[in-house]
Length: 502
Image (cartoon, rainbow, N blue to C red; front, side):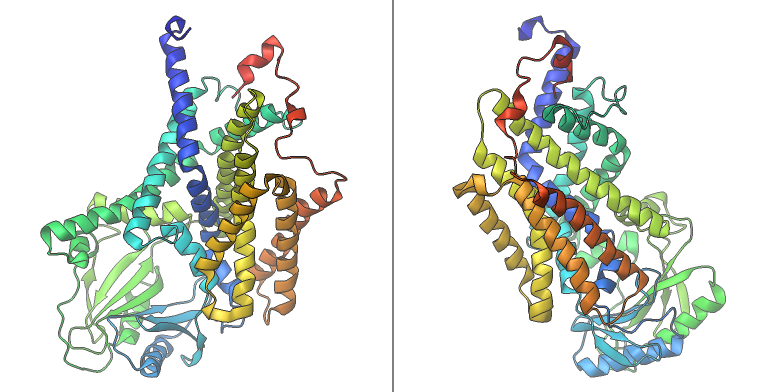
């Protein structure tokens, strides 16, 4: 039969096989990365939601920023290689002083307010960046997932010659396999530019850092910072002699006087309190994808030039544009919400892809109830574990072991699915997730000491999402199995249905 196929049909068949193999090989890991990535888009709003009591302000004066820097450094009492001032932004209207020894919020006058401890948000970010693996291995894995996501997009398009012609053909009320196939294919088409951009930039962010690690070993005797110097500027020469703290206030005043059109977001003091210290001021440029331009100042706050991320070689500008393109941190709230929605839709594409494969096995007489239950736990149990570890953070505080708790909960759910697959069905897990989201939205609102508009919106969204997920499942008299055999009464399809099979 295969020899009778046309070359185009053989290409489609091979692409479909490759597409399925990629999905099965990386589906679970890619789902976790995409789910955490959708949340990471909202990281500033989640940090504000997680720590509602911190002091907030629309701006801070240069003098107050300098006072805050010196005060936190004195309070910590330990030397540090870097000190950072995060200035108020639209998403996070707070001033944060961060060193190698910790981070603290300050008020508008520059006085110490509270320790920064958004450990749940950081857990989400590190899961997305590294899958909670050691940094080098984590970057390798997530970068490889970006490459394979691009490959899955290409093979998916080749495997479905009619995919663009049927881009708006949705049969969500039809037979289960057809409805899931339509959801998978149509979302895949609509999200194709997003998937390509996400996979490409994710591959560069992950594997690119490994390239710089290799360059550091090859050319700079393991000096990682030196490998970045051609793109982002060199580190200052170390001179450990103690001197007064660098004048970040003068650098900020210079920016306000000479670059008022650019919004300053970060100030970095390298080797603070030593004769080798230097100031870098990161400022955003409107209508540019670059994450910002770095302006350089000496320890007295005198301007010494800029790195050239905004007007340097095109390669440097392109590299500086990858972060915003990957995380959607351009265009304000509308773009952030779009990226969040696209990220969740990509999770739906990943979910339905493996679900279709499991449906096909069942329709051919090879049901896999354990695999079906394991996949249900992956899809619905992962976000449920996110919610549970958030409440662990609420109960235990900043020292809560979120990483082992998350992976322990997920492992427990997968073990239960393997041992008793009938008890871990998708409807039950959806209902559990819905109840958890509803309780989290209501509970956070009730316990929060402050209610910024963005945090209220998160609470309302959690409650509504929980109701939409949980109430229909709870209202059923008898939950159906996730892939019930009765759903496959179309094993002898009508002639016109054969071409619709995925």
